Amino acid sequence: MIKVEKMKILQQKEIAGNIFELKLQGPLVNEISMPGQFVHIKVNTANDPLLRRPISISSYDKKQQSMTLIYRASGLGTRELTNQADELDVMGPLGSGFPVETVQGQTAVLIGGGIGVPPLYECSKQLKARGMNVVHVLGFESKETVFYESEFKELGPVYITTADGSYGTKGFVTDAVTAFNINADVFYACGPVPMLGAVEKQFDGIPGYISMEQRMGCGIGACLACVCSVNGPELYKKVCTDGPVFRKGELVYG
Image 1 (cartoon, rainbow, N blue to C red):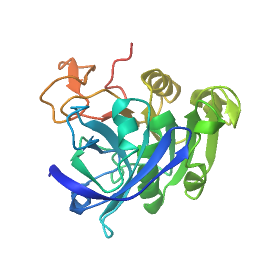
Image 2 (cartoon, rainbow, N blue to C red):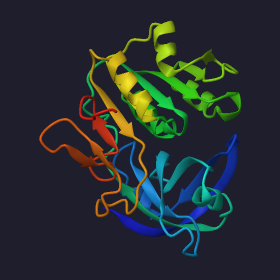
Image 3 (cartoon, rainbow, N blue to C red):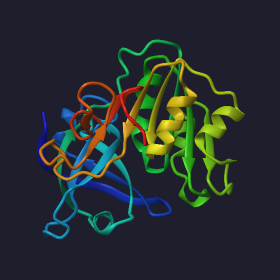
Image 4 (tube, rainbow, N blue to C red):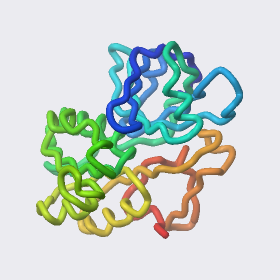
């Protein structure tokens, strides 16, 4: 069930260059059904900016009724969000997430790019809890923007890439997959569209799930601002309600 709720801010801190970790608490957490869902946040009590900001749920704890969000402060709305310290108007949980209960196989590879990394953390935790081996390939712009490396390492091997070569392997996540001969029975990916298309091609022979990053308006499927092209008779789907997670092969890239 989608709820709109004032959630308490437990903690907010910068964990990398312009990357913030935000911990919230409230009954809304009880409605989260799977990793990869997101929430829509009103970043202040005024009407500027007017639209809410979609932020993926990085992890959650239903016993504590708490959840962690990780976001990049890059625009007016997200910069304003960094100034909030008491409570936030939150709508959610929204969208479909990563399936973990029906996955077949022994090893999963989780591939994230930049701010696409956060939703993979809860996914990895739940796959690990179900006895799967998890391998992580995480791509960032530079050493200054790397985050959650140690948290992912507690769950399984981690391979870091940076575009400028200042940390880990220089290049893209697909370069690390090739260099370290990473194989798996299923993959999960979230990040920029070009990265997602390249990952699908690289893991052509195995099933996978893709989480789309897309600008949104309403977050509930009414405004059609987040439609994406898909294969099949429908031609288009809404990222906010049909996604953000899609099965490999559903999306049309380019």
